[in-house]
Image (cartoon, rainbow over all chains, first blue to last red):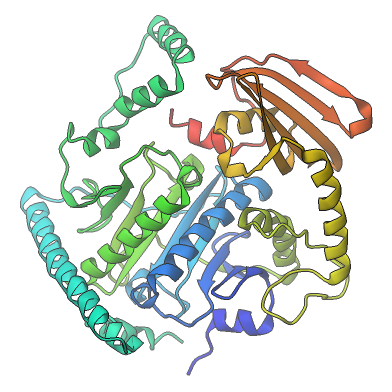
Length: 175
Length: 316
């Protein structure tokens, strides 16, 4: 299996700002701009969907604190938080993380997009498709929680959401 | 986004005067009226809402990067992320996680991007904090990122610049001292060697003596305007400790910190309404007070170094 940059950071112990039992905060070497930092779970989760809720929340809260440190210690005038989830989102490290990017007014970084309004009917269809999926997803979640309550032995495999395997497969292609 | 109506010079002055005299509550209410997203939250401005719960609201961006681009907002008005209580951050991001899964299935895309912009310099376009959730397809020209490698010396510099502050913010108060060779223990937790621990213990014991009826507080508990004032009075201050004392209905905040290698003590007295009454600054304990005055409430912020509150206030 191809080496994972973040698992390697843990092994080499380089660039680590902080770590505890669950997560690591590190300075990145492959960056959009110097000062870029990353918060990631110690356990190797590839995509957001696999990350347990408590770990994800911890990463988010830590990322906020790192962001504050970037403001106060790196002279940042702004910060971006970024999660690249999946190949389509240019995820280049197959290990889930939240990246913190320090920004200044004159850094000329092009971290944006060109917005374009949708046609009225497209908006309506999109809205419906998302809401329908949200409803069935929420039902699934409730059913799963009830299952979990009933059975005392529940492995991680059973708890994983279905339908994400194609995303995992596509990520295994990352060199 | 619709343009704010242009005010004449006279109108602007009147408005500024009005704002100066507002109580914090009135100010918050005023802010909400000016904020398009607060208006959306209360239903005064229509939106394409996808999901809503007690604390958050998620809607389709009317000017999306791609079809299905969602904005996830706290219902409460915050300008930037550092202003959000931790619980709300957690909740907001969990909504993001859920909706990310929903988008993947609903739109059959091969990825999602979660994106936050804190501050104008980071591309923040709205005065109401939000999490962007963008469904992605390969080569869709959204957030095209170019990366480069930085060398180890630069990496190390950055690490040394932030790690103490990060430790502070995480509540692992120990100060990490850098020696020439790596001295971090091989265990997972980066706590310091016994010698440094002892030094810290002695310092803490000495400080406890001074405490009496003063209560230690966290940075998060301090009202942002007071923090901004302290940072303005002592430029570049790194706050190490904060204590608060209640006296005759007023609150006295005592900030201890270091700026340009010197120890500073800043005392801010605030009345029962939250208005700053007095500020006292002491440098290097022996020197005695160097500044004692009653500051103005609204001043032009022309600092070289931009503070968190300046960034948030840009949207007021």
